[in-house]
Length: 510
Image (cartoon, rainbow, N blue to C red; front, side, top):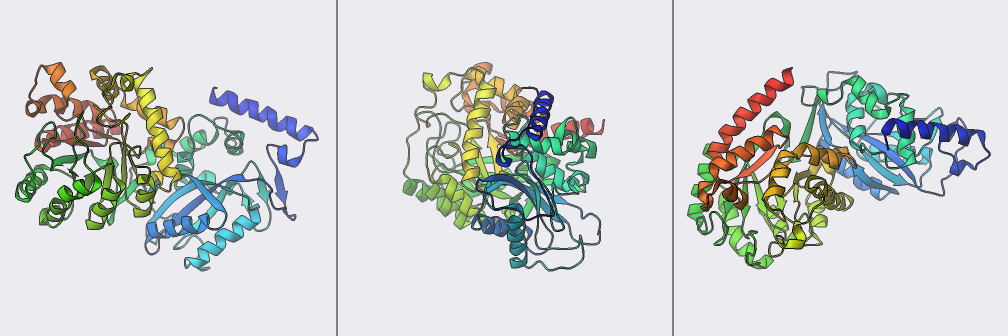
C-alpha cells in the first residue's frame, strides 16, 4: 500500500479511536500527562537511542545492550553505527551513535528508570548537559503512546532536530510500514511523509560520509568508513581443488608470497579459504579444514605487510570461525549465511566481529541442481532469502552494524541470473530496504572473479584467462553500489576501482 495512503488511513483510525469508547489498550495512541502510570500487561515496542564519546565507545554500547537484555528489554533491530561530531557542546570527542528497536513490558517511567540505572552502572555522572558521557540512552518512542510528565517526554522532544538521532531511527524502519505502531511513529513526526520526510528536511542521506556524520563498521581495532572508496578483497585459497587456483598456495611459503604480492598490488582484505566451495567440491570436516587453515593463517598474521590490512576467513563452520578469530582473523565470510551450521550466528554474536553473509541455496554439492535455479524474479528472491538469513543472525545477537551482504554470484545461479544480479544491485538493496533500511545500507560485497559464467559468455574455458571479464563485472558492480569486490587478480581490479571511485566522487559533486 502507498505509504501516504497508509498514513491517511491510520489518521482516520486515530480519530475514530478517540471518538469511541474503546479501551485504552486498543487505542492507537495513549497519552500520560503528569499522572501515575500503570504497569503494562502487554509488551510494547520501543525505540532507544544510544550515544557514547568516553572510553571504549563500542564496548559501552555492547555492555548497555547486554544489560538491557537482562532488564526486560529485548532487542529486535539495530540501526547502523555512526561516528558523529558533537552537538551543542562542541569541544569534546566524537560520538558513536545508533538506535535499537526493542520490546518490553516495563511501563514508560520504569523503562526510564532502568535505562538511567544502566547509565550510572557504566559510569555516567551528572556532568555538563550535552557534555561527554560514556553512555547516553534516550527513549524515542514507546508503543503508539505519548508521554508528557516532569521527568519524561515521549516522543523525545529533540528527535527532529538531531541528524545523529534521525539517521539511526530511519535505519530501524523499512520502506514498507509493517504495523500500526510504526505508522503512529510516522504520524508523530507531524510530516505528511512521516519520519522519512523529517529526515530529508535535515539533509537525509546527503549528510552521510561527510566530516560530521560517518556510517562505520567496527572491525579489528578501528571503525571502517567503507563508503569513501571501494575495497579489494584478495582471494587466497589453500586448497588442492579450487576452480581457479587449486593447489597453487598450499605451502606456507607460497601462501605468504601470494599475500605479499596482493598487498603490494593494493588489497585491503585477504580472504583465506581452506575448503573449496566450487560445485561438487568434496566437503571437509571442521578438523580437516582447520589443519589446512591454521598454519597459513598464523604465518599471514605475522607478516609485517599485514599490519594495516584485514584478514577474512572463508568458512561455513562455526568451529573454524571460532578458532580463526582466536588466532587473529578479523572477520568471517560464510557462503551459507548460517544455513550449513546452526550454531554459526550464535558464535558470530559472541565473537563480536563483522559477518559476511552470502546467498546460496542448498550446499556446494546441490546448489546448481535444477530446483535451486528456479526464481520468479532473481533480484527480489535473492534479496528476500538473504534478508531472512541476516534477520536470523540479528535476532541471534549480530547487530546490523556488523553485517556485510553478498548476493552470491555463481552460487545457485545460472549465467542469466548472475547478469541480472550484477545489473540489479540497486534493486537488491531496495528490496531488502522494504523490510530493513539498516540491513539495506550494509556494505555490499560481490565475487564474480573468474567464474564459469564469464567463460560461457566470453568463450574462455581457462579460468585464469577471465580477468578482463572480471574487471568488467567489478566495474559494473561498483558503479551499481557494491562496496567490496572479491577477486583473484588484485592489481587490474584495483585500477578499475580507482576509476570507479573517481567517477562516483564526481557524480556526488553534482
